[in-house]
Image (cartoon, rainbow, N blue to C red; front, top):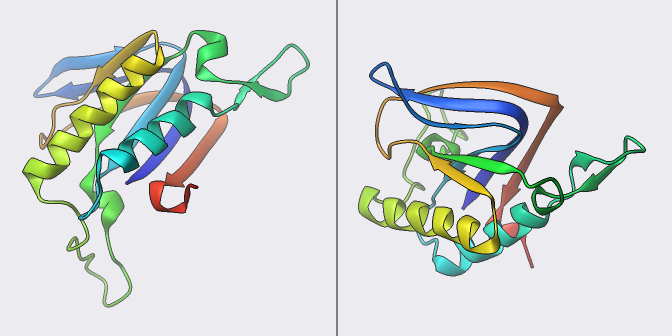
Length: 150
């Protein structure tokens, strides 16, 4: 499972001109589910993200987590994070999980973020053509692969 985490002041996702999810201060999480990923990957990744200390404290040091600031998350499924660009110029998406399995793990990941205590968890629409708006704070952007976590 791969995640691109962007620290945001606010973010929203729109489908067919309608806002389907929006948050204030917190994380926009673009989530790619790879073939072979399991609930264990979702658990490791959600725990890491929830505790990630990348919000600034009173001394302007990145010491605070989502929990510490009562932050929100907007999670958007993005299979293109699983792209293999080693050969040629056209990405290969063979490493992406099949849609049904990917959606199940996406939903599980979102539920885990709620269960960990995230004050608000919003989502995109799985498989839809989405437009995302955000104000990146910092900018701070972190990329995490669940396969790299202990």
